[in-house]
Image (cartoon, rainbow, N blue to C red; front, side, top):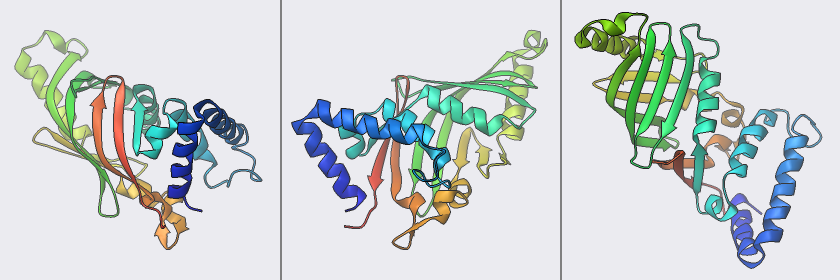
Length: 234
């Protein structure tokens, strides 16, 4: 039995007995969470994935997951970004807020100052050809910059542009590439996934990281909804 069949069975059981199905699924999820460090229960190569997957499970319903619709909350986004910048002395914090208008606000605390970046998603794709998130930056502001906020607006905008050009054009330690130009930011996470444990683990001669692919991302209030496709053999 494969993932696709399990998802269909889960949908059918949920339709017939929603309370019992969710109780069983939550029990399994909690059991894996409680035993994520037990090699007899969870493969040590993937134990670090249990907590984020459990967090996703907590805010998504089985039918939506089976249909390939997964909600990523602001809290999970900010937690992930926090892990990406924790070893970078220049970045102090990143706070993302998502709105139903399709806009993402990103408040960055940096050694150069405090910046507010407003963006929208142009593309979000993960498949065997590419894995990236493309953002169009609609607005950028210097909220504070160590006294420079009193200077001319053109000076603070130069500071914001210098920040974007310098710090959004680099490869992070995780392998994520940031490519910025003409107010378009591309976040390329192909190398991160390829070099991950899932990227090395094969399922029917296919890297496990490609079993679930992302087709698009939609910004909604409080987070981002992903449209997924499950690529599993029949």
